[in-house]
Image (cartoon, rainbow over all chains, first blue to last red; front, side, top):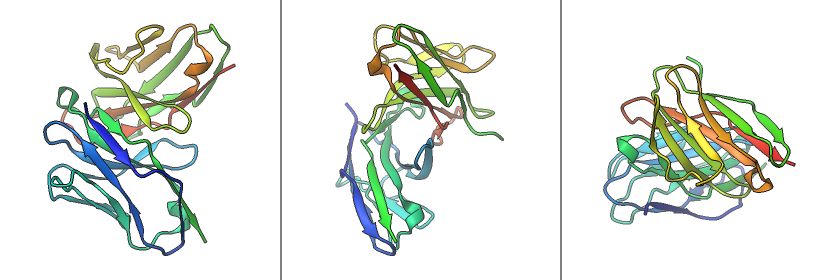
Length: 114
Length: 113
């Protein structure tokens, strides 16, 4: 079945450091890929997405490129801020009935220290 | 356009009671999904519904759990005879008829005591 594997946390960085959170997936067909962010006590917010190979999703300084050859969708940011501290989830669309049922990774807790 | 609305935000139930979680999708969204997030875990898909239809319930426990999305009103996730292991955050998401990425509610945190 479909699955998503992302690096375990917590990941602790200093402010302005470069961020990479690895994500790889296993899926049949050609899924869409997503990164969601969850701030403490809140629901998930869509951060960025890519719907086909070589697409790059970007938002708020975060980027991820859909790499079909390596089945990866790594999240990157050039200079993190304290406000980026949150849990980040990589996900793929499971194509349930052609809609957006998602398969999630376990999440990576990111802690940014001033 | 309000986002996905879930209520209550927090729900405490004693073992053996029923829990009813409500979800109102975004306006114009006809697809609703329920996910469960256990402590220190990612989100697990439970069920996918359209109006008056359950499309995929492959993630639902076989007993005590049910979901509906009636023609009028919110989607309801019902858990009968709750046990401590049901304690989790339950998230609802909705999406429009054409897949475009699901939007999530803030979740209902269920605590079974």
